[in-house]
Length: 505
Image (cartoon, rainbow, N blue to C red; front, side):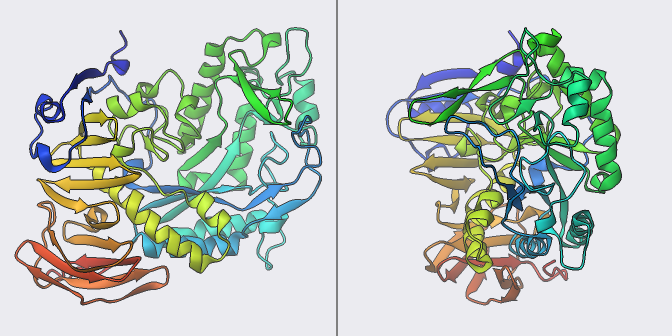
């Protein structure tokens, strides 16, 4: 059996489940009734690429800039081209304000931002071409939208943020500058009779046919010449499918995908041939100093243990989380909530154009997800214990989590660090003398024990954290290894050791 898929499972009572993995402080969290224990088993693993970022310690998000509009979209008709119109959600200047606000709220945590809808008329416009910027996202002072993107990529680095692109390598629209060439070079997906196949969203490119023709390399080379992707060291590939999603039309007008394993029967390439071409694409980006992250863990090639992708926007394969460390694979929307999750900045800022409101939501969601996940990622996983009312994550060095009722609680050495809405979490990217306190509804004189991996002192200083910066905060006191603090609703506070000159970044 492939060791990647070996997970030790047993069904026992809750107390003996902890004993089965040798967990200390077993009774800090409990579940009702019988539980199933899945012991972590490290898969054989070796990187096939050379990473530029530690994604387990980086906040990764997308920002949605613009969307191309279509006259013929679904409801029995498919979109083959856009109608020349666009809906702009934010231009590069507003995206920069988001970057600055996120940096303030994340306390300088390393960040990666992928721009969605940066090209032509916006998201899903003119693929497979990748060579013009969307006019609606440009600054007023720039005639070429790509100049605005270059400016954003450059300025964001001052705020601990690498900005790169969200691209698509499979879709092909009839109004693309490359469509006729790709049709002539015979790299578009066709059925066994030689007819073009219309996928769920557009016509499709065969990875294997395009790679063999040298056109993939040409696309990547030109994109890297246009924008400083190498400086960002990362890129995100949307819909990097191993299969062909075909549309299925329903009487109620809905359209759902049906996945077939052969992308282009006409060309005779197998699914493994297409995946091998994907490997070559990722290695080609790697040769240029660029990591690749895909949309979904189901877009992988050969399995996560092959070491091509360090992060998935949708981290849906629970076997990965049970057999790979966070340093080997991580991502948002994780299938195992007890191992932590990530705030989805793309949806948040798209749905909340008022930045003041958006940042208030971001602050809460960051503290309840990414802040905790970044801390958990520093500890090896030992087991996942699942019951009918929730799940418990067992980590090294006495760290435990419990996912129950849509909330994630955290403990270390038997002491609670988060109860789901109130928390005191180490900010390890600031060193060993920093903690973040947060309360969703507010708290008065809440007492916390400082975890052993934080070296605090009674000379520590405090700051209220907002998207605009920090202000002095003194509604806390330190006594020995405990912190007592009072917080207003949705208040976030940094407490940091000051006796060695430590100041907030």
